[in-house]
Length: 448
Image (tube, rainbow, N blue to C red):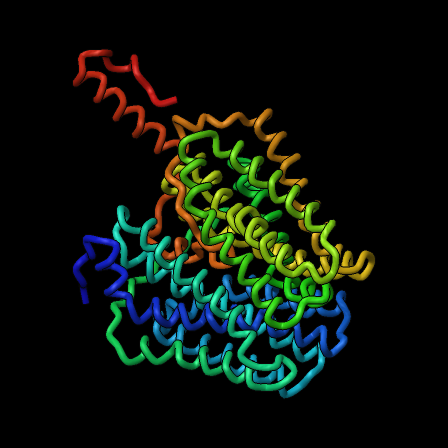
C-alpha cells in the first residue's frame, strides 16, 4: 500500500507518532536500567573488573543484533520484529533480579544488547524509509531529541525506589512492555526493505581515516560513560539521587551541545572542531581528578561539560566520514561505522574496570582522558596528512545519538557502488554546464 510522502518534519513525525512514542518509552527504560545495574552491581560487591565485563556483554550482543536483525525484517516486517525484541528486553531485566549472579547478568546484558541493536535497526530504517531526502536529517534529529529525553528521564527514575529492591526492575519491565502498545494498536505504514550493501572497515578507513578510527575511539568513550559512569559515581561516594543527577547531567550535556558544535563544524574545518572538542574533553576529564569525595555538585556540573564534549563526538565523526563519501557510499558505509562504534563500546567498560581496580574511582576519568588525548593526537596527524577542504567538500551536520547510530540507513534503496562511473557522470554534467554558460568547449572542463 502506497502512502503519501510527508511534506514537513512535523507531519512526518506525527505520521510515525506510535513508533516515536514507543522509542521514547524504550529509551526511558534503557536509561534507568543502565544506571540501576551499575549501582546494584556495586552493592552486590561484584568488583569493578567483573562489573565491566558484565556491562560489556551488552555491546557484544549489540554487534550480533545489528547483523542478524535485518534478516528477520525481510521475513516478517518491522512491527513484528519490534514487538519481539521489546519483549526480550522486558523479560531480560526481570531475570536480573531473579538471579543475582554475574554470569546470569552478563547473559542477560548480551540479550538486551542484541534486542536494542535490533530495535535501533527497525526504528531508524523505518524513519529513513518514511521520510524524503530533504526531511530525513530533521526527522532523525527529532528522533535524537526523544532518545536523549528518554535516557535522561530514565536516570531520574533511579530516585523512585531503593536499587537494592525489585521495584525499579519492575518499572523497567513495565516501560518495555508499554512501548509495544501504541505501535500494535495503531496503523503505522511500514517501509519496504531491500538488500543492504556492505563496505568493510579497511576500505572505509582508507577513505576517511579520522571518521573511521574516531568512531572506534568514541565508542570506547561511550561504553565507558554508559557502562561504568554509575559505578564511578557510586565509588566516589555519591548517594543514589546524586548518581542519577550525575548520569542525567552527562546526557543533558550531550543534548545541549549537539547543535552548536554541529553548526560550528559546518562553518569551518570539521577536523579542527573534532580536535578542539576532544582536547576539551581531555582537559575536563583531568580537571575532575582534583575533586574529592563529597563534591557531588561539582562533579555533576563537570558531567554536563564532559557529556557536551564526549557524547557529541560521534555525530561529528559521522559528518567527517560523510564529507568524503559519495551518496552511493554513504549507504553502505553506515553499517561499518556502527560496527566500529560497537567494537569500541565493548572495550570501554573493560578498560575502565581494569583502571578503576588499579587506581580507584579516578580510573574512570583517566580512561576518558587517555581516549580523548588519542583522538587529539590522531586528529592532529590527519590535519597535517589529510587536510580537509571544508568549504568545498563537507556536507551539513546531522546530530545523531551516539548509542543509536543510523543503522537503518543501510535499509534504504540499494545503490550501486561505482565511483568511476560517478566521476564520468559528474564530468559530463560539468561539461554541459560549461557549454550552456559559454565558458568552455567539450573536454575543457571536468570533475576533480
